[in-house]
Image 1 (cartoon, rainbow, N blue to C red):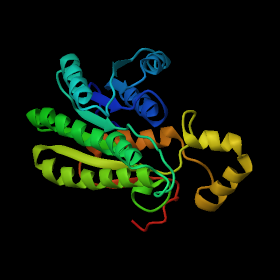
Image 2 (image 1 turned 90 degrees about the vertical axis):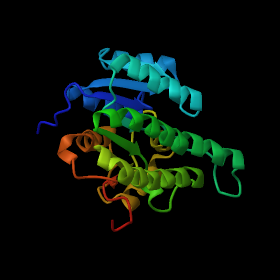
Image 3 (image 1 turned 45 degrees about the vertical axis):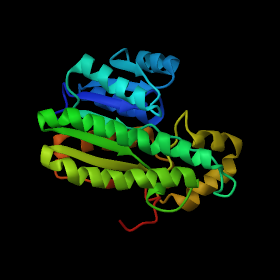
Length: 253
């Protein structure tokens, strides 16, 4: 299937490892022009080398408002247009609600929610000029239902809600906004690999009990959905939250 992504200018936030890195590789396979952004310059350089120097890199801390503005300005100076934005920055902190300080709740919202809100607003300003564009927010099945840490769940749930609100607002400008909610994905920089190494029997039992497909998902399986959703082949998908989870979610929709 030709996704017609050749030459599209793509910006991937949190693109230096894990799901973000796989998304970058998937867009490269479609001959898109890919830029990845992250905080760690060394990791960005390593990922660029891993991808045969076919990506551009921009170092930025997207929890800082001025850094987000600089990031979009730098991207536009290099590419002139922004066709696709992938908001993939994210992380988990804290423990139970009562044992988690309010500062950690703010921190989670800054990273998982406000960064994507602001970057989306900045992207829309550019996309409106061409009357086209796609924004995809990487959320989580635990933004759709209970499970995991409250700080993470709360911020991802807010991002899913924001996705629908923005999607309905800008589709008339030719801009599609959607979100993808991965389940438990195993990769070298994620929490699941650490848990598997620490207690393999417990994690094997978790997979058996919680994931009907009987295994963890891969970053490539998430990336494949992202690339399709960003393409014209998904032109009638607007404001959706799509699970990529091997059946892990307990929801009926």
